Amino acid sequence: SSCLSSTYAPTSADDLVLALQNSFVRTSELIRWLELVDAIDALLLLKPSEPVAITLHPEPYLQLEAGQESVLRLTCRASSFPPPKYEWYFNGKPLSSQIQAGPVLELFNLTTDHSGTYKCRAWNACGSESFSNDCEVVVTPCRRKLVNKPPTLYATDKVALLISNANYEHDEKLFLTENDVESLAKSLAALNFRILAFKDLGKRDIINAVRTFCHFLQNGTYSLFYYAGHGFKCCGKDYIQSIDCSNECSVEDCVCFQDVIACIKSTPSSFNLIMWDACRDCRETSLDSRTSIVQTDPPHGSLRARRSSVVVFATSPYNSAVEVKGHQNGLFMEHLKRHVGRTVPVHEAIRCTLRDFESHALSDWQIPVVKYDIAGDHSLCDAILDGPGYRGNEILWTFVSTLPPDEEFRVTETGLRLRVTFSCDREVFCNSMLVTASLLPPVPSIHIDLQTLVCDGARAVNLSTAVLRVSSLQTLVSPLRLSVVLRDWESKNVVYLRNLHCGHPLVAAWKLRNSG
Image (cartoon, rainbow, N blue to C red; front, side, top):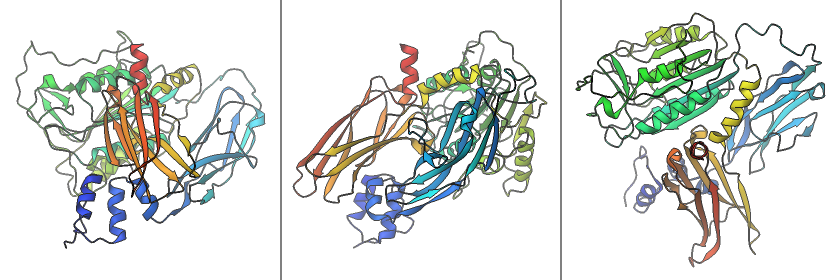
């Protein structure tokens, strides 16, 4: 018999099955490999449960003023296995799940009746639970109908577009860009940003993503754009390589980063942080006056660009951006994520990032460049002043953020329940969704087979027989339909069959909205 290396890392469930057929393995190794392929149903049988632990408590005290434009937002985060669920309490009683059942509690149109003690219960399917610290909220009576003198710097909304191009069809695969987007997205979500995170986009997809993003950039909005992937510099401009590009592609196959900057700056947003985390190596290619550079037409007409932006390049012209083997993040994000959530002006957070960069062993190979056209002390932590702009974006937001509802079905004559859950890939991507089927309680003798029935235009890959990743949702052309089949392991007989109608999840609904 053969023995698998301790460094073996399967890339799919099929790889793992083939390897196991010819190997003797320890349970701990099997669990590690199952985690690499996200085989949740198998992990529920093998991996020890982890108790719920609160990792982020809500603020201990908040004082707010009642009014139609006031909003209460509290955040609680927890870790556990199986993954935790959340339930919010007010004065010791659970709030309706229709109000909020996730890690972020949002209450609008506050009155003095909202004063009291709030806390969050985090729990998982194994019965473990933990409560957050209390948050004492005091809502004072409204003393004026209008804010006479709002804070010097505030946002009417905060929106981020994050793009990770990693799995190139004809070029070197990048291993850390998805981690970089995930790290940044979760940091920004804690600051109440709306997150539009995409992975593996083609040229037309990138242009459409920028146009979608710009629809959210209204008067007073804070925007953040971040691209991580392959790129190059040609004739003084930087180019984003789409996922179907090779390293020999021409500028006609790519999206000009300077066009993206111009599109964002042409909106009425009050502050823009625009970041490029890709190589800027010089590319020799033919480019003359007949070449059509991709233009992402601004949705706000001929608005003039204003002094509103900070543009950050992770490396200097004609140099590369570095991925260090064994690191969780690329070199730029490794330093940026330490400062992005600090309550300091953006220029101070960037300055601290550059200072940390200087002490890195590879600092001579990658030198970030920052360009300012704004002098204000805007911070990513600035408060959101609730108003018509925020509420208008809330309507748009439903077209890019809505998942199919989790469902639970009784398996006839068995006493078992089939549970199907939906989540964003890595909890952040709006064009990639994970679907997980599980039995409650788990039954090793019953095999779960989760498959697509209709997935036109999108891509579906089984991470295990009970976990399905549906990606490229931005190109989904018809409602998504799935099936779950339960079979007896020994007889192979079908125990239960359920078809699921999932509609147009996440960003697929935006495409449907625009075509309707």
